[in-house]
Picture 1 (cartoon, helix red, strand yellow):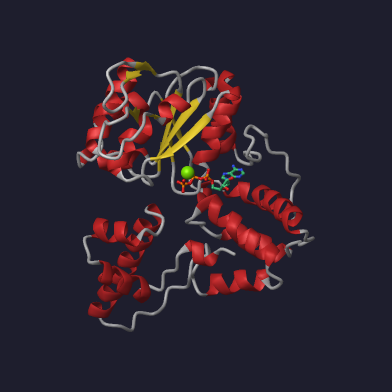
Picture 2: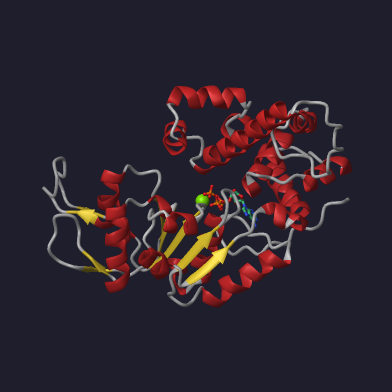
Length: 336
Ligand SMILES: Nc1ncnc2c1ncn2[C@@H]1O[C@H](COP(=O)(O)OP(=O)(O)OP(=O)(O)O)[C@@H](O)[C@H]1O
Ligand SMILES: [Mg+2]
C-alpha cells in the first residue's frame, strides 16, 4: 500500500482538514453550506475525531473569518470561575473582582465563540446560557446593562448527550437551542479509508518539523490502517510523530501493538477451546468490561484521575490500583 498525495482542503489556518472519506466529504459539504449562516452548531464525536478542526473550519469559511475565534473549554475552568470567564464581571461583583473584566462572549464579538465540552457546563450556567441564546443578550456578573451577543456560537461535546439528557444532567431546552445544526463526526475506525491520507500528511508535516526523511514500510502502513484507533485521529497523529522522531519508531509501534497499548488487532482471534471453569470465564469477562469502562472514562476526562474516580464512584486510591491492574497508560506518557 503506497501513500496518496495529500490534497486536503485548507479550510482552517491550523492545517488542512483532510477529507479522505465520503463521510468526511459530506461533513465538509455541510460546513460549506452553513458557514455563512449564523446558525448555532453542535459538533459531536469521540475525543480526537477533529471537532476543534471542524469548528475552526466553520469559522474560517464564514464571513466572520476576519473576526476572532474564541475557544472556551467548559471542562477546564473551575465552575465557580466559568460564569465570569464567559460573561465577564464588573468591579466588586465578588471578592477578588478588583476591576471590570469582559468575558469571552465579548471578546468573540464579530467572530465565533466555540464552547468545547459543553456537557460539563454546571446546571446554573446551562440555565444562563439558555437565556443568552434565546435573547442574544447577557449581563456581566454584578452588572446592570445588557450586552448584545455578536458572536456565532459553536458547541462541542464527546459525551453521550442523550444519556446526559435522560439522567437530567443536561437541559433538554438548551440541547434544542444548541442543536440547530448538528455535525456528528464518526470515529476514525468507521472511516478507515482516510488513514493513508492522514498518515501521509502527518509524515510530511513531522518530517519537515523535525528535519527527517522518514518513510514507512508498506507493512507498517497496512498495520496502521487496521487498528480501531480508540483515540481517533489524535492517537494516529501521535503515533506517526513518534515514528518520525524515534530512530526505532516503527519497532516501538509494533511493541505497543503487541502489548495491547494501542488499538486491538482487527483480525478476529482464533477462539480458544474452553478449558476453564464458568467462574473463571465470568471473572475474565468482568475484568475486560471493567478495563473498557475505565479506559472510556479516563479518555473522556483526559486522564484527570480525580474526575474519573468521581464518575466511577471509587476512591482515588482504588482508581490508581485499577489503572495499574488493567495496565492502562496515559496517552500523554505515550507521546514523545
Ligand atoms: N480530518 C483531519 N485532517 C487533518 N487533521 C486532523 C483531522 N481530524 C483531526 N485532525 C487532527 O487530529 C488532532 C485532534 O483533533 P481535534 O483536536 O480537532 O479533536 P477533538 O475532536 O476536538 O478532540 P477532543 O474531544 O479530545 O477535544 C488535531 O491535531 C487535528 O489537527
Ligand atoms: Mg477538542
